[in-house]
Structure formats: C-alpha cells, structure tokens
Image (tube, rainbow, N blue to C red; front, top):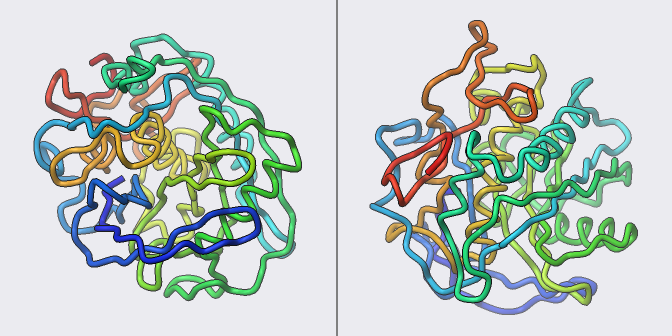
Length: 320
C-alpha cells in the first residue's frame, strides 16, 4: 500500500469485543507510532502511479515490528441479496490463494521476494503459505456507516472489522499468522475515514485489530471493477473481473506478510513493499492484447504488480 496517513491516536472505541482506535488523517506520511491503515493501493490514475523506476524513497527500513514468518489465508465474499459478483469471481480468487500456497518455496513468483525481510523474533519470512478456505456471506448490509462518491451503499472500517470478526468466529478460524481477505460485491463502497474511500482514495488496504480471539490481520478488498478506471490495470488473463481484484490482493497479501501491524518494513516515506511498485507490472510472459500475464503459479496465469526488493533496490517479479 502506499500509506497516506500520519496517524495520531485520538481515542479507543469499543465495538462488540473489538478494540478499534480512531485516527486523524492529516494527509502526510505515516508516523512510526501508529500506522493504522496500511497497504493502501491508490487509484491507478493517481498522480505518480505507474511511475518508473519506483515510488517512495530508497530501500525499506526495519522498524522493529513483527512479520508473518508463515501465513494462512481465508476469504470472505460478502454478497448480500441484491448484489452480485462475476461468474468466476470467487472460484478464481480461491484458486489464486490456493496457487500461492501450492507454489510455496518457489523462487519463480513475486512472493519469494518477501523472504529477504525478517523480524527480531522469527527471523526471515519463509515463503510458506496455506489457503484455509472461503465463505460466501449473504448477510444483509447494515445501515450506511459512511458516504462515498461512487456507490449508494458504504461500509465503514468498523463495520468491516465487525463482520470479519463475526464470520471468523462462527467458523472457528485461528487468527495466528493468518490474513483474512474481505471481498465485497460489486457496487459496495467503503471508507476508513470521512474522506478516504474506495475508488476515490484507495482500491484496497490492510490493517489489524484486537479482539477476544486475538489479533486479526485483514484486508479490505472492494470489487475493483466497480470503477475500472480507478482499480483495473487492464489485462485480464482469466477474462474475468477477478483479475483486477487479484492484482490488489497480491499487493495486500505481500504487505501483510512483511508489515502486518504497520511497524515492520517500510521506507523513509512510509511506503511498503507493494506501495513502492504499485501499478508497475514489468515484463509480460505471454497472452494476447488485453489478456496478458506476467506470473505463472501452479500452472495458472495471473497479472500481478511487482514487489520491492531491498536486495536489488528495485521492483521484481521473481527471485530477489
């Protein structure tokens, strides 16, 4: 994400069993003390995005926080009555998360770049991922918790956290070294503050919260093709709306591994490994116009952005 927040803790709010802090957004980079919303994927057409050679300032710096040495992923698809996703949306995203897990340990995709990062407790990240499964959540949406310019319905971050906590609890999901992706249906907006909203400010972000079940790492994943000009890079190797969402899913997944609490790896300007390479895709491996791909995982084709490598001081798709 590119974090656009300099977060200052104002108060602690309690929603159910969740401890959800509130933050002020002054538009500057994140402070070391309280970087609440991270991995914020900006609009593809935002000034500076897609730039070369990279965004931010220099290599990532270690800020003494934890990484995820291994990781398990779960997917929640919140598709209430009256809303929909594309025909292959859930199956392609599930396949992708399974393919990332299947290819654990391989140097041939962008996830291997994470293995150069470490923390003081676990040592280096190990490319060791597991896909725990998914749930289609048909619960009706709560009353609007926010207002955004692109949709008539809007979920606040507190509402997203509450639903993640509810679904994960109902299914007995472990929270340790786990990233839960909340994929919302087409036409559902969200905001993490009054002016920072899906499709106008971000295409996705990752964060965490504490509850009685432990610390939960999650990513808010709006339906990217709700506003294609903002969140779709153009290539669809699987010819489905899921392709656009998968690109930002990879961004958030890699950042949640290397900076899960916003206090591990980011550069002096506040950019995480995905932020520095947002909307930069590198060399293509094949495909036709509009359907090109640059990654092969478990034999399947994907179009994913590059990730930052301190080892090479550049964005990479494979190796270090």
